Image 1 (cartoon, protein in one colour):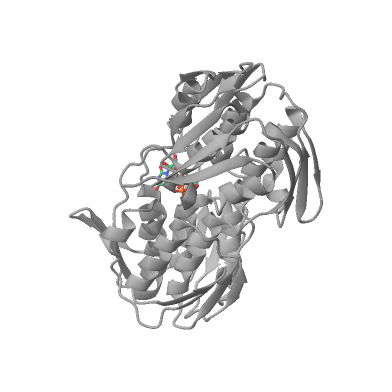
Image 2: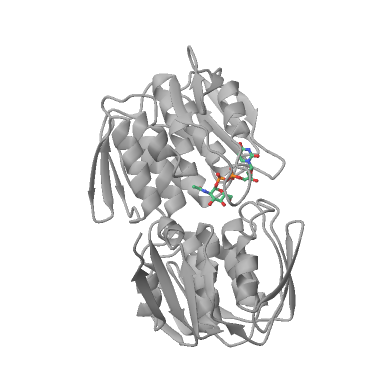
Length: 421
Ligand code: UD1
C-alpha cells in the first residue's frame, strides 16, 4: 500500500491537463452491456475504479480492449450475475443493474453496504425499476431485479437528500429498451447524467431532457454500437483549482469545461481568488489568504458534495470563520479529524463544519478514509509546514489519475513511497 509525502510550502505554477470524468466513464462503460455491437469510449481515465468496472464487464462476458485512454467493449453474449468479489470493491458497480435489466430483463449484483461516507441505499433505483414493471428480491446479500417485460412508466426519483445520480443513470439505462415512454421526474441533472444520455442517444436511444429535472425516454427495440468521448472530470478540475488557491501563483487547467464548475468558481471568487476561463481552460491566481465562506452542498448546479472536503482544506488556514454544510452526505466529514491533527480548528455539528482558519497548519501522519477526503489531505499538506504523510493512498488512486505527478509538474514536492505488506 503506497503512502504520499507532501512537503509543504512550495509554490505552484504552470499548466496541467484534466482527465476524463470517472463518474461519467463508469456508467458509460456499463451502458456497453445494452448492445451486442462494439462500442468505443475515449478519454477513459486510468483509475482503479475504472479497472474494477472493466473487470466486472469482462466477468459478465464482455470482450474488453484498452489502449491508452480508449476502451472498446463488445457485449455479444452476456450473463446477468455480477461477481461479489469485484462488486464489493466499488459502489458504482450497481450501475450494471440498469443495462442488464434493460437487455436481459434480469440482473443480480451484491447489495452495496454502508461505506465511510454514510449509508448508501439503492431504494430509489429499485423504485425506478418497479415503475418499469420489474420486481426485486434480496437474497444472501444479493439484489436480483427481474421482469417478464419492461414497460415505460412514470417515476419520481427524489429521495430525502435530493435526486440520485446513479439511480437516474440506472433507470435511464433500463428504460431505453422498455416498451413505451418512461418519464423520470426529479431526475439528477449532473453533467455526468447528460454525458451518459448523449452516449445512449448515439447508440440509438431516444432520450430528451437530460440535464433537467424531467427526463423522457421513448423505448426502442435495440441499440447499436457507437463511439464517444467522456467529458472532462469537473471534480478533478475543481480539486486542482483549490490546489491553485492554496499554493498557486498561476495555475492553468486545460481540457476542462468551465460551465460545469460554476458553483465552485463562484465560491473561490467570493473567497478572493481571480479565475479566468475560456472555452476549455481555466486559470486561477493564488493570492494568499482566502476570505471566509458559507458553503452548502446541493445537487447540480449547486455546490458539489464531491468538492466539500477540498474546500475545508483551503479554509482551514487564514480564512476567518467559515460554515460548510453537506446536505447530500451529512456524515461525509472524516477529513475533519485528520485536518485537526494538522492543527486545524474545525467544529462539527450535524452535517455542518465550522471552520476557523488558523495561522499555521503543521504536517502530520494522516489517514485517508475516502476518495475526496484523501485529496483534501494532500491539498492541506501543500500549505502545511513540514511533511504531511497521507496513508492509505489507494483511495486517491480510485479517482485521481497521477495526482502526485500532476502536482509535481506544477512545482509541488510530493513523494510516493511503497509500503510493504
Ligand atoms: C454519485 C457520485 C458521487 C457523488 C454523488 C452525489 C458516481 C459514481 N458517484 O454517487 O461521487 O458524491 O453522486 O453527487 O457518480 N440515496 C438514497 N437512495 C438511493 C440512492 C441515493 O437515499 O437509492 C441518497 C444517498 O444516500 C445520498 C443522496 O441520495 O444521500 C445522493 O446520492 P446519489 O446521487 O445516489 O449518489 P451516487 O449516485 O451513489
